[in-house]
Image (cartoon, rainbow, N blue to C red; front, side, top):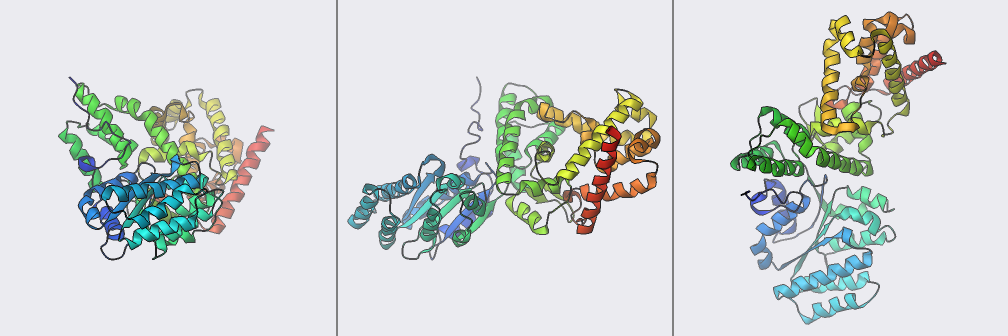
Length: 496
């Protein structure tokens, strides 16, 4: 008989015994929302499925007794379920009234104000304001949680004044509520997508960014897995770390499949892991890419992870660290929340309009070099190149390993050309190893001059994640642009 899987609820709101860590975030929410003195509002921002809703649910569950003592009326609304702002604000008042009645706190004045909102169409903000004013006068603190706030980019598109309504509910001392906005996207990006370029209305909210698990929280997660018998070996654990990183949702998905596997007395091997996780990991990575593109972060992130360095400023990097998509691994380097996501960005790179000239140059250079390698060494040129030029073994093997790993993780999405996994200096090293047949047909006889030019291209192409102190200067970018144009000119003239 199969045991009950303790991770069967992965992907849903997690609280109680399954909830891990987040002590500092819960403390901040308590200080901001449930202080016995003043109180304010919060915007909880973070990657998709990083645990924002679970954080609020756990905070409220732990504070149940305090909520009653302080007359806090909790309302949670899922904004994606409403067709119009009128539906949303009507539901806000209706649910608030229901909560107040359930707790036995309602009086006639509160009821009459609520009735005005629910009976009149369209909903008037002046009527909503009077509801919250009467509730405040009654000594009741409304705690209103607006989940999936991203949906307002559609919901408020025709009524940008609704952003101002929320600001008033957050800030006016006569009728303010404790408002929590839960969003995957930054508030300014949500407002911009709704056609409302202002961000001033969000200044009344404390911003709390929820990042993936810390290292300590990740360790706690795996200790729980050990407690139910899910103990991957070293190689599988390494792949789990690469695919899931420190992300709670992906770790939960692994835990669910891992428990089922162990319960069936089967091993937790890498092939099983990749086949079980491939679809959900790929879909989740794509969801992150969509959000990052909306947040105008994706282009900068690709530059950080893969280069070329074109217009990334220190503030951009700090914003990505703050958002939780990047972690500082040491004084010079950065890493994303998972190596698997870094690898996935390789597919995304081609669709990101960072610097079309660079992309065109790399594509053309790889294509012509692939052609020359096959002409020189035959269809199995990687093996023949290693035999002929032993010094290139490490370079070729590294590319083969990366290609094999990505094909195993992402299937047909992975690039099938070995040169797709090379950087400019890799390409130059290959050409330099047999200049007469690989370099000279493209670049001419001056090998030394091209060594200097490729050195500059390599610096521009070097990901900032590998060396934050080596930012590219404007003059170097202009030189790189000139070199790219020269390369393209040479390749084009050769093909004519």
